[in-house]
Image (cartoon, rainbow, N blue to C red; front, side, top):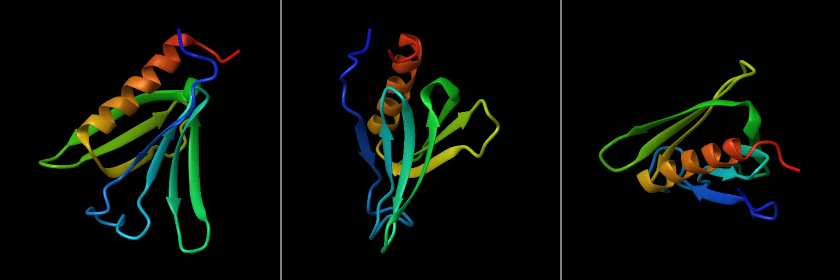
Length: 106
């Protein structure tokens, strides 16, 4: 069973990957939602999917970096992010599966 007070975990893409040098993308996983935060010079862009609405998590591993794709059951655009370490991508998937198995937050 998951801890109801568990803090969100944040995973930052490598600055050595395309599009992440100045403002690396972050994936934030909490017991309620998974979010992709892309910082900009002024502000940021955030997209999120409720944990209960995650349909699948796909990880594509390259030589050094992994790409993660999180699809929703609602038919909206998936959350995609590249430049993560393989261990981080696996941890994101494991957290989502653990939170889904625990059921709705109380």
